[in-house]
Image 1 (cartoon, helix red, strand yellow):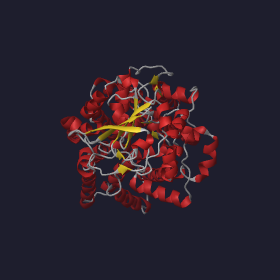
Image 2: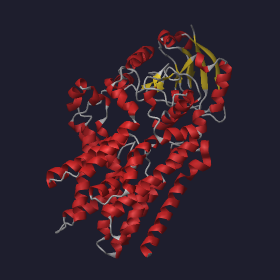
Image 3: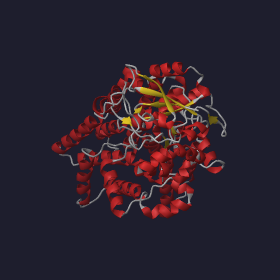
Image 4: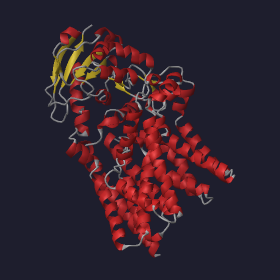
Length: 562
């Protein structure tokens, strides 16, 4: 009874902490400050465009006319994921806040179940399991990834229980529902490969076929493929070549690879930020020394050594993927260039926090009061580090990025829409100095975009517009030609910068656009957040500037002359 009471108490305290952590999103709404990169500049606008387009259930040949005159519907992902429905049912920030809360609650529950069931079974150490799980749930994961990485602990809890023949309906329910709120290619492909390798090791080492475990892996894989059927169709039967076949990513020599390995191992990655450098890493290293110099290694110690080696391997593989030894295979095999196999490192949040939990437990087991105090202090310090990673603190106070309201500036763009006066489906716009997502969010049809899947033929046609600008700047040219997911009207003078807010004093003095190529794509207007001093030389007629107190931008409207 005391154990159940203690468990409930600590779980409720952790849930309260999660609610407090996400509360600014609910309280501030559109005045909240959240991540811009791969969030405000893309995914959140995509969800709104998709919801407004009427193509939620569009066929595999359907297009989104608002983007580049017909972006393949498949580029905006499957309709069989809850995040798409949240953004169709609720306003952008309500959907975003619900998604954050749901993801963090499931992440906490999954890690807690994993640690208590398979890693830290000592009931007296339940506070360690709870605080590590809370820490994991507060990590600044990529928002549109949902449970793609944050759901790994829950899935591992279920699979290990199935593997040990201790599973019930709850474990099967977990692996059945996760595909409805996670991405296959952005997390679970790599996780399921890992599960397959565990099954294979069992087969070779123990001569154990274990059909139930294999069946569970196949079941979850099949659900992901069925859920993301659009991606499957594009890869297998898609008739149009997409821009990803031109990706060039393997240029590094061994020294650069070693540097990238150390950077990833020590600091992590932007899309799977673990914030493990200052507190967790020293604890992991201290525990590693303890295990290495231990005379008799227990099973938890052996597991810890295995997790440490796997952690190192994931970072090394990530770095190695960009080494030039892969350049020739990637040139001849489209899948290797189009699919980022470096993302096995997306397993690192699971590995790092499971290792952290086990390390704290191994130290706690030493029994000394001072060591146990040290463990709890480290756990609390990690929670402090994560508390300061709250989006409102990072983006509102530290980076001072625009609020959601200021970024999308709906009232300002309503003024622009009213000034132009024509139905939005009768003309297209391009943006300079601000993300095309802003125009897309406000219902404008755009010739430019940022998407993961873009027809290669359109990328080449768009390149004609900015060919002279790319010729001036080697970095921009390589960025566009060898990646190209951002079809932006780049300026060599502005460089690889995507937004210039209303307080900027930058201007473009010598812009060289192929306006005829822009007209061929339907471009009629340009929204620029910086003044173009030689607009007339580019057949651009300045109309007027738009400012608004609630907007991050001062938008200069240019009309493309016919």
